[in-house]
Length: 270
Image (tube, rainbow, N blue to C red; front, side):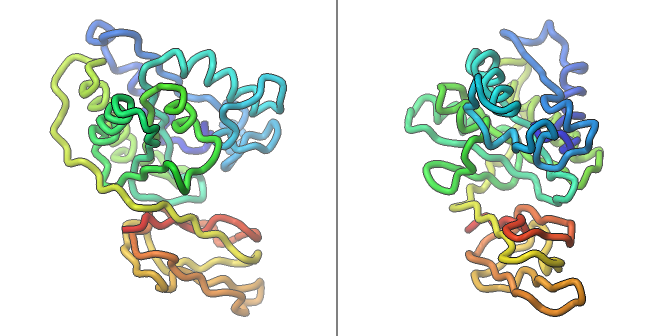
């Protein structure tokens, strides 16, 4: 979905080419790239056709903008015809992150148990349970879950780099999920379940300027700690950014150039 999050694209290609169809139980559909226009433009966050973030427009609109039409077709013609869905992501071209998974509980016990089983099998250290508060609206994994599909999102890698361990993490995690749900022959690997954060707090800039990050991913911070500083184009201080909660830094924007309301970093509250 996010065209410059290359780890997920590469992992999907490897999974599609590497899994023996004779070992699959049911039908396995692998879609390595969904935002083709953005891929060749190296587009960050959005698709170049209309400037929309494709993972914020679900369930879409069959008569809407390009991204809304895309989202509607993907959800109604493909995803909701499946029992399970895994959305592979990475940090974007300007994001560094530590691996984590995101899922949405629906209130339907059997479905939520299947979703947790997927999240637990991936092998990430951290998990974000998005509902009912703090959810990024319009996300595929959430709308899929609300339509009865056991679904989750996995993050690994970032910064526009194809680092082998990041790609391998996605491949290993998806393979383990497929085995855990019975879609692929073989016993799943025993992995520790992720620690679920109590909230997923995204910090945004109050002004445009240059952002100096004072933390790194996986770093644990306390509420009120200084996590970054914003200065103007001659270095004069504009704002000090503090952690809103005690927790772990899950991702950091690596670009110093920040617009007003631009994303800075995210903390998973502990």
